[in-house]
Image (tube, rainbow, N blue to C red; front, side, top):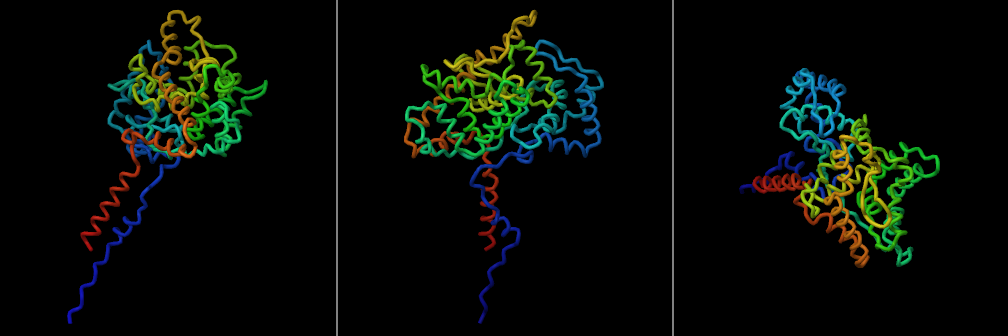
Amino acid sequence: MARPPNPRTLPPVLLLLLLVPLPLGADPLPTEGRLVNSCIQARRKCQVDPICNAAYHHLNSCTSSVSTPSPSQELLVPEECREAAQHLRNSSLMSCTCHRRMKNQVACLDIYWTVHLARSLGDFELDVSPYEDTVTRKPWKMNLSKLNMLKPDSDLCLKFAMLCTLNDKCDRLRKAYVEACSGSRCQRPTCLRQLRAFFEKASEPHAQGLLLCPCAPADQGCGQRRHNTIAPSCALPSEAPNCLELRRVCVSDPLCRCRSRLVDFQTHCHPLDILGTCATEHSRCLRAYVGLIGTAMTPNFVSSVNTSIALSCTCRGSGNLQDECEQLEESFSHNPCLMEAIAAKMRFHSQLFSQDWADSTFSVMEHQNKNPALRPQPWVPSLFSCTLSLILLLSLW
């Protein structure tokens, strides 16, 4: 009697493919490996190419000797620096990016601004945001029922402050900057550093909830809490400097962080019309706005009675640069894109507390994922890989 054929043995590679887990959640804190073209990765590629590596080092020495011009000035670059820039034209450095929450962010930004000189000599935009937000994050799951310890008529700024207190990480980071920014002898650099740490490391919904909590027009107590969120008495200069001088300090930041955040703001909060249409998405504008807090260009609410935003600076004494100064100041105080982005976020925050607490978690998840096509989905490659391996398995079975 003939023996039945033995089932085919699966190749080990296919077994391994089937064991690859399909990510069901969002990515953790981004690293350079998760970016499409991280400047750190691009620099490593350049290092193995002698011509690219030599050109990068030459351009790096040029960066310190070429001053950053104002928008009304022309960039003056020595000829040898132009030659070095030409050698990098085909390098992946020309399109590299960073992420504001990535590890080694300072090193990444340093590389970005080193090759920025090469970008500005060709058909590239002179100032393009160095940040690329390609990492999706987990939806914010709130348990608003914990707020029942507050009075029912408590304002929303107080409720968002309580939500931060109930979250260990948010509470720890908030206490750190409150302590650094309090007292009559506060050290402004320390205060700004702790503010940056809070808005960089605390979850975005917690941070934006504290900063952009909606208040009733007549509720000055709520408005004052919102105005004081960033500890303006310590974080902002005691005497308003000239806005152009403030920008000069920002652009000359040796860590490139303030310069990067300012360009990010100018990229994503650029208004296309008076109706509040942004060059990109409102969420990106808000992220860029929040990113400036803790830098030399820290903006804040003007008062406790409205949601107007301004820099803590003046255009008095600007001389021939008066128009340029006013344009910079009005990019915050009269920016319809920024104003509409803030208004939309405050409307969303109001809606969170206008529905049943049992549905709160779902509402936040629905809001943050209602347009997934606008963001890359990290599970797509894995899904394709698992589907392909299943097809191969069936064909061999």
